[in-house]
Length: 204
Image (cartoon, rainbow, N blue to C red; front, side, top):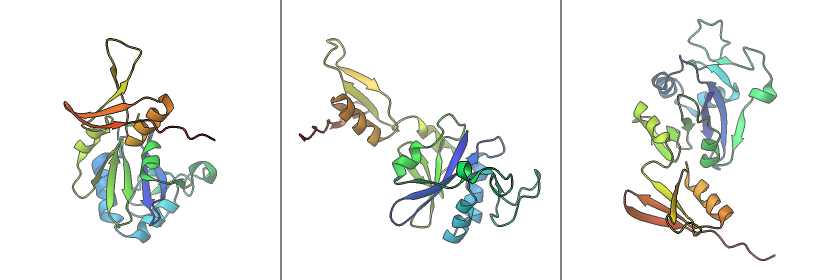
């Protein structure tokens, strides 16, 4: 299980690494480290260049001395000599793709992103919030599309035409509507917000 930390470029693509989701890596500790020690693009770039981490420290520059070294990051490549092919920096071409890589079984079910405005954000499912104001309650928004319910139209069932379905992002709903060739209805409480209709396949 792991937590994702990424940096967004001006083009919108994201380079990211994973951090071990162990008991010492709490939400409060991670956010404090990122906000206080990784404020500039240069330091964030140095962090991402380390590849996957076992420990997030305040400095990315020096080797982690031992298990009691809380200052320096512990890189799986640099410090544990593990494979760069398996633990190196990874790429996502959008925020939705980045969030989809998150290990949803972890206790800290979110991604951290240093955006192109040089500010940190936390991404939980379809929710994005500035790390400057976020607290641990933001993790509760990992439960699907926060505040919304999605229903799939089922013409085969004469009793329940609308069946509730679970999605984490709008993109997932669009893909499901196209795959099933079936409209999906988005509600907030009792109010219908929109209908996601399948896109007709173009004739070849």
